Image (cartoon, rainbow over all chains, first blue to last red; front, side, top):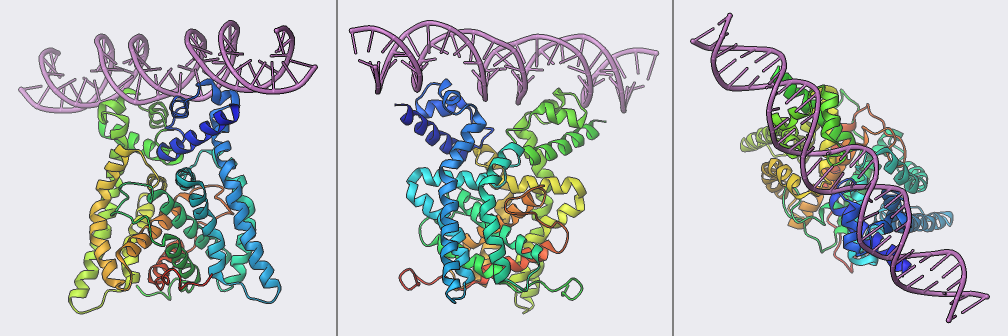
Length: 216
Length: 216
DNA sequence: GTATGATTGAAATGAACGTTTGAATTAGGA
DNA sequence: TCCTAATTCAAACGTTCATTTCAATCATAC
């Protein structure tokens, strides 16, 4: 029965953190949704912060593992002489996030909304835990991107990677909202493919002309 | 002296909301930073939520006015037969946000971080106020984008607009952070131009092939 | 100078928060 | 069956929160 309790708490916390944010969600709300006793959170997880960490580890670890697995596959092909396509790297980065949504159903959608939200979280402790989960992904993808975009400076590559992360995080949050800014968003269709094409084109865009050469 | 009090509260709230989020910031923190009495917030603004609204209206209104002014300029040129360039529309959308940062100095940077954060805010009341400020911008930019990207479906255009918004919001938050995910971000250089090029390329990317035609 | 209205100040209100406590209950091996 | 450890429960802890109150202070017009 304890395992069911832990899972129910994680599910409830995932949904509420995604909907209202970490600070705006109380343990009383979580335990009410999970239909468990208030003290169960501190008993099973230790603290509210530790609960958030647990919520993340349950889902992020598999997503980032899948990202690295796909990148491994691309590099294995490259070792056999087949050139790595940027679009495939973009796909390796973006797809696991969306596949997780489908794999975990309604809960997965909530979680991805939470991930999008966490990308703009500035609480230091929470960021530190979040950072740790994504560091291995950055360490692998950045060098590959730099190699595929040799005309760009290192700063440019990092910027563009963050543009991509931003487009992903934002769309994950917005597609869950009833009323996003500036008009409704379709949910079905091939959103993933649109995201892949957008970011592949953005990453490969010609480097901006140096200041002074550009037109007014 | 009252005007100075209101301004000091707005400045303090802007910085703290940006750094820690709305729910995680207390009025006591705000009034401490502003060096005003605790009751001054409720006296001048009515409530904590009304304060956030005031923080936004002070800055967002001018930014969105500038966006529309730039778009007006482009459409005026178009009326004289000169074709509108997508890149200029992208610029009209992205530049005012960055110009505001420079115009308002350190406070502007904090505010832009707050804007980025608000894009993933899901509290209904806050979103409603936020939405109202951006609706006129959407109403003007969406038709122009649709006209400039005639091969895309309406859903595709909306998606790509949100990809752009996401890249903007994310970079506004991340460039203010000590340690963004996946590696440090340069702050100087021509970040704006990089963002413009990235999004222009992304928006003009060829529409994804229909499902089934695409390669595995 | 004094009356008046706007602003500030210190203190208190009641509610909600995360966390802790210790007794009651449950589950499983001896 | 009984013992033990794990889990659940109701209640309370101390703290912090947004907001309110009302007296003190300020600016200003008469």
